[in-house]
Image (cartoon, rainbow, N blue to C red; front, side, top):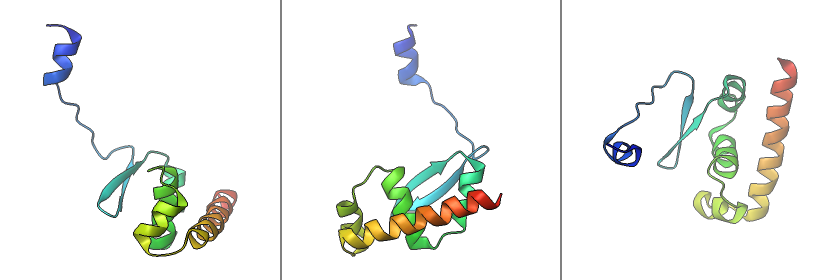
Length: 93
């Protein structure tokens, strides 16, 4: 059996060891960096969703704003403030 054939019938088990799953509007986002996970957990749900949608789901500010129901500018400002909170959390540790 070739590797291509094997890939069609094989499954890969991923256990929750080594990453944290954050639910974001029906999508699971997996974050593998423990330090980053702790900083993300400290955020409000809205801040967390904006950061995860922007950097992990690669969504634009316009797309995020449409989902959340806020303007693109509000998404941008919230994301920038949230990044500062995450930076400060990293500096503490």
